[in-house]
Amino acid sequence: MKVVYSLVFFLILMGGCASSPQTSENTINITINEYSEHLMHYFENKNDTIIYETISVYRNNDNIGMLDMVDSIIIFFFYGIKNDDIVRYNNFRRIVTDNKIERLINIFNIIDETDITAYLEDEDASPELNDVYWTLYFSSGNTKYIDYLLKIVMDYNNETENANYYLAAGSAMWSLSSNIQTFPSVRDYVQNNDILSNNIKEYILNNGPDKIEADMIQFINEQRRKGIW
Image (cartoon, rainbow, N blue to C red; front, side):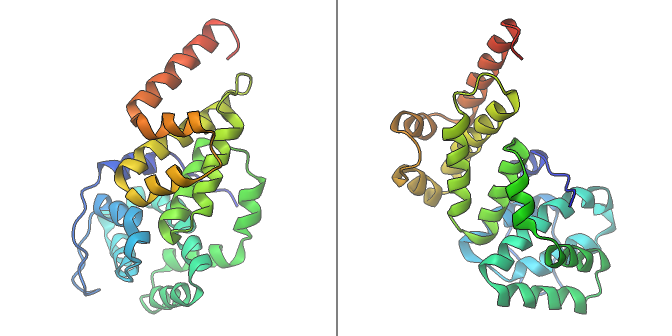
């Protein structure tokens, strides 16, 4: 399965403005930014309104130009829901089928017909893969996806030869720093987790994403001056 997935997801999420979900599938009128924000917060309440918001986004012709990106996000989002609660997932699939949204029906077919777990296990560490694991966390609340990010940080934070692995660790630290500012539950989990060494944990907990990004840029520039990258 070839999936195009990028950090644009988080740029949209961070720029979105949350709004209160409507309660009726017939009255939902939601922007892409609002929808992205609701995806990011879904794990906190697991509100079934998300499926009607998804349908609204796909029915809105103004969103046509962005649906390729949305597709690659919600494949993993609803896959996370499937692993978390198969009854809810099957109900969502029924609602999509009843509403005859062919593009969404195809997405659910991809989820059911593809071994996504094997696909993810075969992928090398990367910033894009980090985004996927955040999406799985946002759709399920399962902290094993945060553990993946913590392990990437520990494995590659000192990487000096492979730039891609260094960027994977750096983007994981950046996203952890960002999300612990938004979600107290993420902060508590990172704080109490023993995967990270104490010095790296303190670095992530006590520095904002801007500082982490600046440190990454400085290190990358140093590597380039040395002719390594």
